[in-house]
Image 1 (cartoon, rainbow, N blue to C red):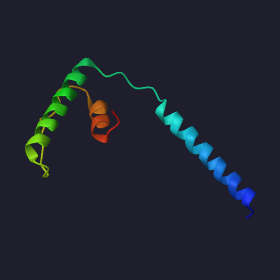
Image 2 (image 1 turned 90 degrees about the horizontal axis):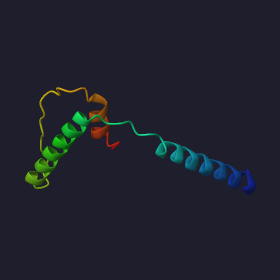
Image 3 (image 1 turned 135 degrees about the horizontal axis):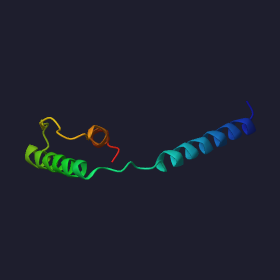
Image 4 (image 1 turned 60 degrees about the vertical axis):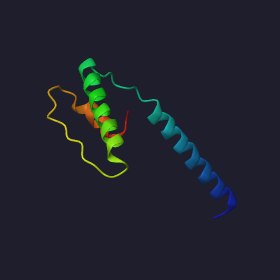
Length: 82
């Protein structure tokens, strides 16, 4: 394969990657219900407290069953989409 073909293929891949990245970053965020925001803030607080008490060692944080319909928001939180 010639150098021009390699350069052209590399340029096309770079443009495709930049396009995909900008598309993924531009996706609209879903609105979060007020009750879910409060519940997520409580969970994040508990997780921070658990991290500060763990001294860098592994630990377990337990939560009771969610009484609200925040399944999608909690999925986003634990996958790191927030």
